[in-house]
Each structure stands twice: as structure tokens, then as C-alpha cells.
Image 1 (tube, rainbow, N blue to C red):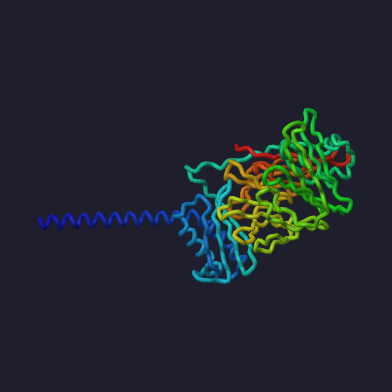
Image 2: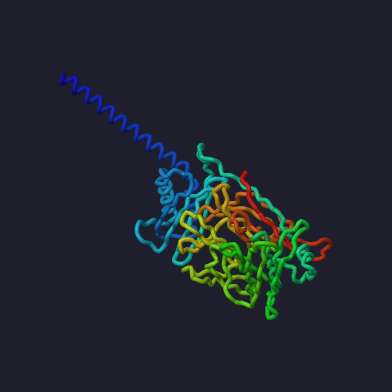
Length: 434
């Protein structure tokens, strides 16, 4: 029996050793497969980082916002470190004057790896695409279709109001509130109500006679928190509107007033975000970068801004700088956004049930005969188009989120027939999931 016991023990030991060998071999095979799968993009990203950083040392962090399994991260990190080392960049485990933040993200076309290279106060970005197919069980990303619904034209509104002054017909901003249309022009704020035959003017308030006209005016209309009124801003002017419901006919009334003002403008056209204000340079047609209250980061002069509330790290502010850059203020850091080469000056965030649930709608850069709008998502710091362009038939002059935050109000300037000037159109742009 003792001999038999010894043979059984030896047999079991052999099985354990053999099983361990198979496990080790399987693990090595998996690591080798990972290394082979990600060797191309890791090597390419390492080369691009080294081209920017040069021979130096740096601290490396990797964030995974993609469908790549976390088990693959050690292999990806090892490939990046090996590629950087071969290009003269040493990765340190402690503090370093240089920081490399690599984000593994993906868009509708595949994986996108973005590296932020931080050297002192300067941050530069490089990126590569890693054409790894999505896992077989992962749901495909939805595409989005943009739809446009015309609301009103300046020529029609002026005709209803008994006005025929092309010099004051330019619509700067508009909003639909309390079954009424609030329109801010270059000379007044007007309120219209719908009728069976079109829009009828309820009331208006002219800008003060001391108002100094701007060379290229812009404006903004912000609904009140309770929905019963608005604030409106144009260069050197601030207006308010108060809505009062009545028990009998007329069913409602509006009180409006405009005054001269150089106060900062609410940065975003949302009642929930009117606490953040920015100083507007009326002579130069952009925001100076000075914010009240301060956000803790110095902003460059910028043309437009949009709040992206549901980022992984919390709310972020997207701004279009006057030098053409698109920047994301997130976690008290100002980061450049890639993939924005054909963006125009206007952007508005929307919250929908499509795709990732939150997108920004952006005007085109205006290089063609007419502008277009397109919907984008922002994984990491990469702008990914998720809709086809929606042609406007004119020039996008302004873009603001609608009060429902699910659509946007667009102001489009369209040429009249035979070159007789321009008309301005107020449109609602919405999204549908495909």
C-alpha cells in the first residue's frame, strides 16, 4: 500500500505540474497575442511622442475609455515603454518634469489612442488609430441624423410688425418661450405669438438711443429659471422680458425693457448656467477670456462656449478660441481637442438618447458656398463625427441650445433672389437615432 500511495502522489504531482505548465503556456500565448495585436499602434504612438518630447524622461499614465479589456493594459504599457525607450524616452516611476497621459478611446471607425505630452505649462497632443474590430458581443454605436425645422424668417416677422428696414433685420438670437418667439435683432428685442396666419407681434423694446452699434453684432437670449421671462444681451445693451399669465383674455402679457450696458454676458444660454458670465469685447466681436466668477484657469480670447455636463470626470467647458483652436476645460486643466479642423465658430451641446447620450452640434468652417451642421461625440479629447453634414443653404450665424437641451436653435443667413441682400431664418435642429 505504501508503494501505491507513493505512485498516486507522484501521479497527482505530475498532473499539477502539467496543469501549471499549461496555464503558464496559455498566459504566455495570451500575452504574445496582445503584444502582436497592439504592437503597431503602440510603436507608432511612441514614435510620435518621441518626436515631440525628444530624448528625455517622463512619467506615464494610461486611461482606458475603450472596449479593450483591462487585462490587455499591461501588454500595451510594456509595448509603449519599449517603443519610447528605443526612441530615447525613459519612463520613470517617480516625479518627472514631463508627463505623458495616454487615453485609449474609440470612435465609430475603431480605436483611437491619444497622448497628451505635458512639458511645464505646455500641453501638446498626438494620436493614432488602432483598427481593432469591436468585440463580437458589443452593441454597434448608433449613427445620428440631423433634422431642420424652419420656425420664422426675418422678412415675415418684419412684415407682420409693419417694419421694412433691412438695416435692422439681422436676427442675432432667438428662443421659444411660453408659446411665444423671442427675437433679438441688431436694434431691438421683439416678442411674437403664433396665429393661424403666421406670427403676430405682441410687443417690442428698442435699444436705447445711446446704443453704439457694433461692426459685427452678436447676441444671446437666456430663458429665466422658472420659464416666465428672459434676459437678452447684444453689444452694449442688456434687455429683460417678464411674462405674466392672466385669467381671461388676453391670456398673457409681456413686459420688456432694454438699457445700455457693458455688463458681462451669461456665458451659456441655459437658465441653469447663468451664474457663469464672460466679458464681451463689443469692438472685436469675441469674449475676452475673463470669466466671473473665475474658473481657476486663464482662458484665451474665445468666440463661443458650450457646457458638456456628463463627462466621465464631471462637467467640462468646450470653447472655440479666436485663433482656431478648440479647447476643453476639464478638471481645472485646459486641453486641446483633436479632430476639429473643419469646425466653424458655433457649437452647442445637446443631450439625447442616441449613441453615447451626449453630443455637440457644430457649424462647418464655411469653406464652401454654404455652411452645414454636424453632430460630434467627444471621447477623451477627440472629436468624432457621428452624423452626416446637414446642409443649411446659407451661413450659420448663431447656434444655441434650446430650453429642452435636446435640440438647438440656429440662426441662418440666406441670400435673397437676384442678389438683393439677405434674409435671416430661425430654425430648430433636432436629432434622431438610426
